[in-house]
Length: 57
Image (cartoon, rainbow, N blue to C red; front, side, top):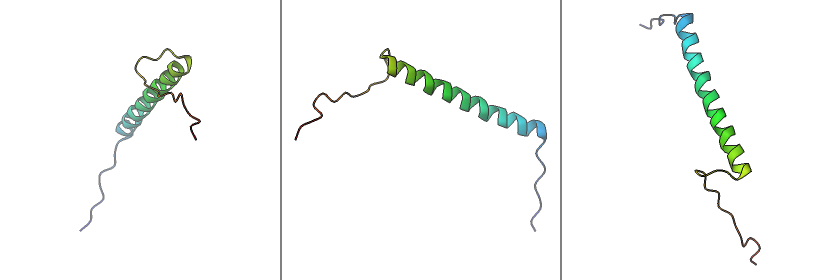
């Protein structure tokens, strides 16, 4: 017979949400930092292929 699960406490719920938000904020910060470094040309870790001969027909 199906039995309902125990209710998760608000503290545990808030703790999980805080972890998810912290991880998302960190990823957003890293993405923004990488984007800025690529646009300024100061990136050493990101390889962006530049096509020198684009119009070859």
